[in-house]
Each structure stands twice: as C-alpha cells, then as structure tokens.
Length: 426
Image 1 (cartoon, rainbow, N blue to C red):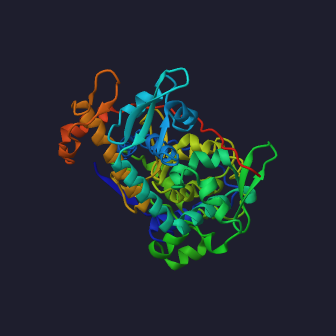
Image 2 (image 1 turned 180 degrees about the vertical axis):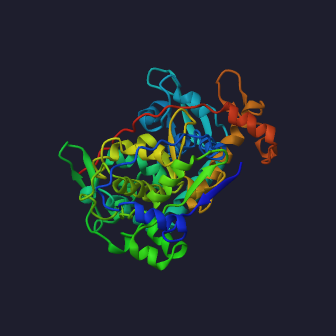
Image 3 (image 1 turned 120 degrees about the vertical axis):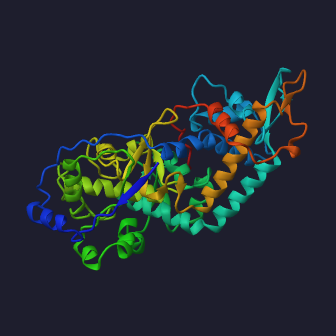
C-alpha cells in the first residue's frame, strides 16, 4: 500500500494564489457541499485489529493488581464488566480464560460450599504492570499537561467524569487516576458537582504556555514565517492509494486549507457554524484532541458526548467523513475508530509514548497465550477445570506469519458498553 501526504501552504503555489483572490475569507461564506468517499486503509485497520481485547485485559490486570492478595473471585471482577466493552452474551470468565499467559485461574469455596473461580496474574503480567507504574511515575508531568490541555479545550474548563472515563485509556491515564493522580494536584484540579448532579473534573487555572496547538507548533518548522503570522495554517493531508480524489474536491480542499485557522484554545463563539471557517475550527479541535491521545486515535462514540463541553454544533462528527485525508474511520471490531492519519506511516505510530511501548509488549503477551492455547499447550487438569502450562518456559517467543494470522482469526469482535461512573467524594 502506498500513501502520500499533501502539505498545502499559503502562497506556496500559484494555484493557491488564484484561490485566494476568488475565495471570500469572511466567515459569512457558507459551508460547501462536498462529499468524499470512504476508502479502506488496510494498514490503519490493522492498527485497530491488533489492539482487540487489549483494553479489557489491561483493565482487568489493573483491578486484580490493586487487590491485597492480587487475586479476585469472578463475582468481584463482574462488578467492573461495564468498563470492559464486552458483549452481553460473552461470559467474563470465558474471556479471561482465553489468555492463560496473563491470567491464572484457581478456585475458592463460597459460604454455601459452591466452587467459585478466582483469577490472579502470571509473573510476566505482573512485571509489565509494575513497569507501567514506573513509566507513569516518570512521565507524570506529561500526563498532567495533557489532562490540562484537554480541560482547556472545554467550556468552563470542566468535563464530567463519565466523559473523561471514556477517554482515559486513550489519554494514557491510569485506571484509578481519580485517586492516584488528581488528589496530588489540588492546585490544578478539583472535583465538582455539575448541574445535572453528575461529578465533574474542573481545571482551576489556565496555563497560557499550554494553550498552543500541535498544528501551531508544527507550523514553526513546516511552514513559512509569513504563513504563521497570517493564521492560515494548513493541515497535513494524506490519502490511501486508489482514493481517486476528483478535481472538484481537490480544488475545494486547497481553498479550504487557505482559510484562517482558529486555535482550539481560543474563543470561537463569533464564528457562524454554517461556514467552512467554522468547520476548519472543528477539524482543529479534533486534530488537537487526537494529538493529546497516546495512540492518536479514539473510538467515535467517545467523542459523541463532547458537543456541549467543546461548544460544537449539531452533527459535528461529520467532519470525519468530509476530511478523510486528515482523519480515517476504521470500521473494524464492530465499532468506528477515528485515527489521525499524519501520526502513522502505514501501521507504525511515528512518535510512540512510553506507555504505548508497554501496551504493545502486553499485546504480544496476550497473543502468545492465545496462540499457545490454540495449539494445546495449556491443558485442563481433570476435575477442577483449571488450565495449567506444563512447559511454558520452552515456548519460543517468535511465531511464524501463519501463526499470527491464526491469532488474529481467534480474536473476538466486541461492541462497546458505557463505563460505570465512579463514586467521588466531594
């Protein structure tokens, strides 16, 4: 698959100079009715598929690791099912047993004498979990800054915890960030009661140094000085091979790139939502939001609740379809995932956060256990139903391409459920 990037700069081409003369920059210009087709990008689809089951497994690891004995019965884990995005017809114990390289099953007896499955972690999983804690500690300032910038994008610098919880995985926040991160920064954050009686997180002070978007930072390197002063910043654009962009759409895109850029951290209440200038501001908001995530992607449903906090018009997510050169919508895993194209070269994330590296190692551990289980290396002992690994140390880590395909075929495709809102003492 061949992909290319188009960096449109104001004044960089004679064609654009002509566009500037015949295009009215005023925000009174109406929204141009242009429809661009969706074309499959196998590389970016593979990025989504590779992380199937990863989020749910990592959440379970965090829950089990936080228990005093690092071992919890299945009924305790079931209380957190709403946060795992598993389908209703899939038993939680069935999901956990898919990954014997991460979870170890044992049994305890309930008061009535019934045998209850309990799950702990393998040494390899525990080691990765502790490495993740160290990475979070070493990069805590980066985490705090990204959380600040997210709240600075919103009206009143406030987000409901329910909305923030939907984004915490993408932001790289720890599972228990409300207790392990927020209380340590009382000068920056505060839990508040919202008018609808939900709990929200509020930023207490504005940091002007953080109120610079990633596009503005990149413009200092990628664009001319006069372009940055004019405020007409252009977004990096890339298309999958075979996209077949029509000339009319290409001309519209080039004109659209020359429109004034409104920072997502500035007040945009004066913009008419029915204009291309306003649409460029919306694109800028999501361009910045995706840059705040560590994987440069998020599920589309995670941003559906951001319309009011981000002061966006109705049907604001239509910008994803109108700008497939900036955003790619993957339809894998029975959901829609919005990916920032410029952040990837085929399947490779260009700038990896340390947490991403750890998650990739954890994903390999999951795939290894799933593959070994499919090959019969984990056998059930008679009578107790517990899976044991007689020679796990002899298993080679390097697998053939055919084995990798087998692993991908074994993964389930899950729908997403809304996470439970945690209880916070105000």
